[in-house]
Image 1 (spheres, one colour):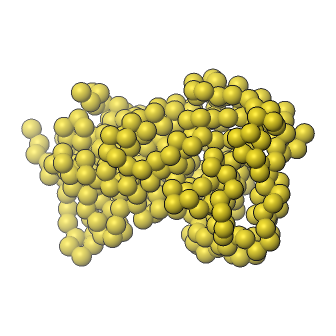
Image 2 (cartoon, helix red, strand yellow; image 1 turned 135 degrees about the vertical axis):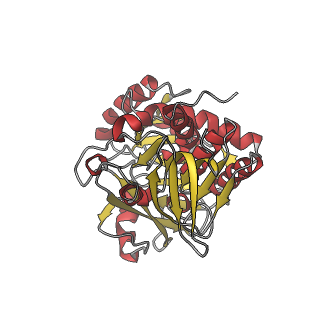
Image 3 (cartoon, rainbow, N blue to C red; image 1 turned 90 degrees about the vertical axis):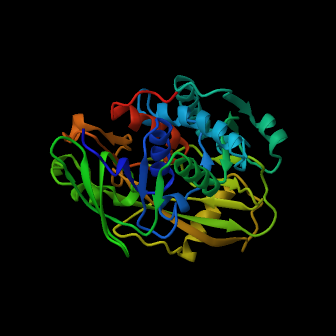
Length: 374
């Protein structure tokens, strides 16, 4: 029987990569998670909304629908068990004009098909009782939505992997992999001390680098690698008192859930992200975009004062669709797709990837032929 340095190597130490490592570690495997940056969660995972999504919108039968709901339930339990800070504050999806009210019912029906718990339709008066400053004609109430400390979550995942005998190796970029005769892979890792590792299983979950990593795996069929589109979203922060205690979302727009409101765990109000497709990763925030944000925020919070929004940060989403194209599902490609035994390759893990991360890890383990964890 072949001897490997690790049972499994995971590429990428963001939330999804660490959750995959955790799922494999729970099954008694030794896991090495390779991260190109000097710290965990420095990519997509450091530039998101830290929202726990209920699972309202995603098409029936999709991975996003199933994994968001399963992942959200598992995530709350994990956060509680590991004493990671969260706030199950709930979310209001608001119709701010009479002609938007009819858009709420299809969302409600989809949420019910997706088995989202506790959904309710609220009148304007009921919403006003919950959030007096919120302008709306009607709203959907999702009590299972919330916010959490995503970095604390990733640290807890790292701790679980290391407790299980695995390692999270920083400043060690993936440079390539070659399938071995008889099964497994030789993985080439760079950094200050370049090295080769052998493993029986390989999982690639590097976010924006997913397509590039796949191209560096020998024998990976190029025609199965989806095109990457960069969806940039910027955030603006409110100076002054946060007006609402719950998440506030407009009805979704094509390709995005729309710029929303959240009160973060520190009590500050943040609006965003918007969506602009870009041709390179640029994390600057153009102050001129404030005008669009003022207009959008005032549609549900007319009292927003002039000059109260300041540029905050930006993120890039690894989209598998371009402008005006339908939003596809997550891609968790197993050997049935690419033909390489022992490899799971993840593409397009954008929202709700953070909420879904624990369930994504379980699906990866299942697609690699592993038994459920005991």
